[in-house]
Length: 65
Image (cartoon, rainbow, N blue to C red; front, side, top):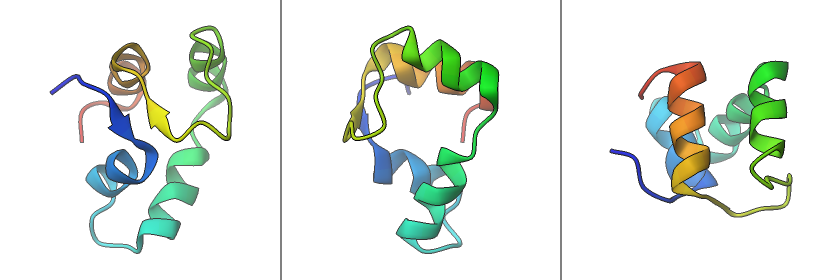
């Protein structure tokens, strides 16, 4: 479902079998086009929540968890 997610909540959705920190690290290693698309929405690395628009982009690039 597209809605705002905390970074850790979304990371755990993509990798529930690993620790929260490891899941965050894995999510941060996304591809360059996704990173650029997120930046265009105002995303910055210290942001704690993804907006609905950012979540939609992540789903578009990575598929739904």
